[in-house]
Image 1: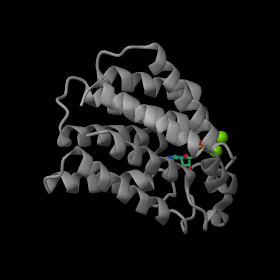
Image 2: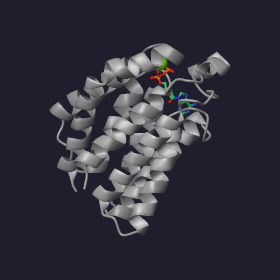
Image 3: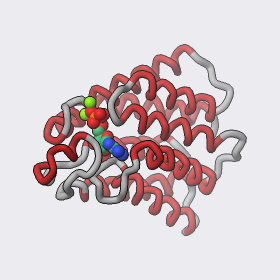
Image 4: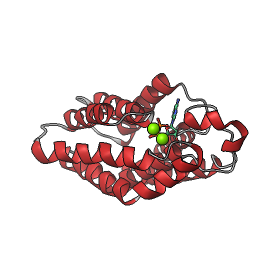
Length: 206
Ligand code: ADP
Ligand code: MG
Ligand code: MG
């Protein structure tokens, strides 16, 4: 797994987010400010523009640049959160031989950035409700002997379950929390985009 593999992930993810922009924005219109799809699409189109004009020597440089691009191009909650994820994920891969275990450590480092910035707890109805079960499923798959692809498939499936489980929750973080009890009955937009991130990783990495 080298630069080309990670570039194919970022490009696949950009096109997936573009295709799902209207859906993500519709989810955000129910419990937020109707911009999650356009935020993610704008951010990842900017990442694609960087990929088009830059040749990266190593995956960590490319992923860190993607993270910085998301932080600078996307306002709101999701830009800094996903931006920090990619920055920390890339940083953790610096100089590392990419193995199922080291990729899992990098994912954990990325999610550590989300925790530091957003302070989400499990059940707050945020993207962390998809990330947390995904990390656990990834580790469990690796412990059972899975390769990167198998572990990412398990992570994406767990993220999808976490995403679905956000529906009945009352939001305690982000804009949706302003709605209080009225946020229940709606799927969290960020948990939905996180599932797309991991499904794209499962398609392209490993
Ligand atoms: P904004 O809410 O600023 O308009 P977006 O609509 O792009 O930003 O993103 C909203 C998503 O961000 C939510 O669905 C939720 O998953 C995530 N989110 C919001 N606040 C937090 C937080 N403190 N920690 C983790 N995730 C959060
Ligand atoms: Mg929003
Ligand atoms: Mg907004």
